[in-house]
Image (tube, rainbow, N blue to C red; front, side, top):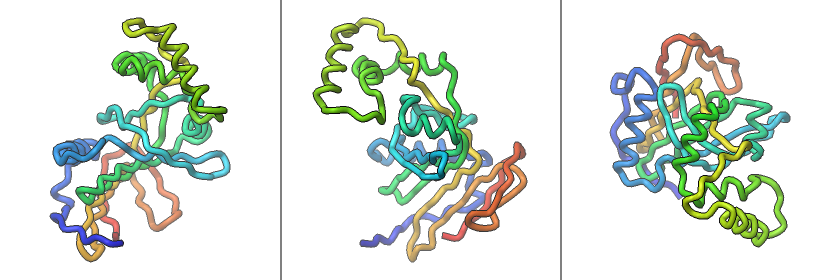
Length: 221
């Protein structure tokens, strides 16, 4: 199964100076193309032994500081981030033959920011954050439904639901942001923003990350 991608070449001089500005442009174009949930992203983490895990979550905000998502702090990704803050994000915009790949570090957002977002969620989603002890083993679906029903009785529609203490946001501060555009004959464009002095000499090599201006490097597809 193979598909030939036909799209315009992405050039270095056509990119924004800042990766988050470029991301905003591509994100807007993905939304305008009516992709299903263009804010869906794959978050990859690793445990203390280096064993990776991935899952899809929804991006809930982004700005010059990075990318924000929300989850249960006791979930697998929450536990792994607590021990190893290095993460990768992948936005798989297949219908328009694009991907955005981010590497960086994740840190919890402030409780005020978490509370503001929690209050914006639908009532049912607020209850669901309490009902689900994310990533923990459960005996049956009925047990989950029973927890939810108890919470719905305790906090009916219109009742203020408290913000769970073990639930909140993470902001991923990017170290690299790669923009991938598919082309014919597998000659894809891969343009990566890198912060600081060092680039990557090859797979597995060390790279220094600083606070200097972003630069763009082109990778072989």
